[in-house]
Length: 153
Image 1 (cartoon, rainbow, N blue to C red):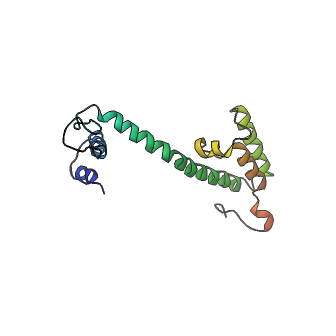
Image 2: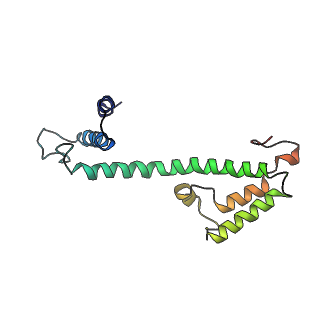
Image 3: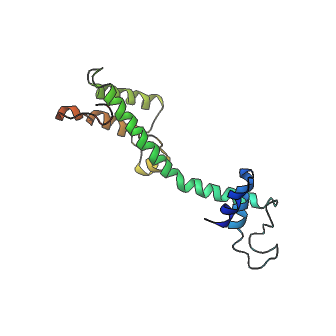
């Protein structure tokens, strides 16, 4: 654990001061001497020059983690679609077809891209794309083979 995290875990300070401490110490590594005019030019926690460095680090962190969080969200949304199909299986005739029509209407109303590229889905989509959802609804039928659903038994 970096010393900035260990130091700040002991003291009870506001989050902004803790983040500023970490940013200041992370950005302090290019310094060659103790002169305040070398390296990044950040002189301390109360120096406004640390704010752009903090924003840069947060932007990079968010940019890198966004596709990961989107993938997790798409997985959960896919499971929710599967659960919905399993719950409505015995309640509506041909629940997969009904769900596919509902997703088609949703895509039309929201002006969704009918065939998004894989890169767009990977980078920007936090829900499965409409074509993927429609394909899944039309193909998911564990009951035809004598099986049962994963979530509803």
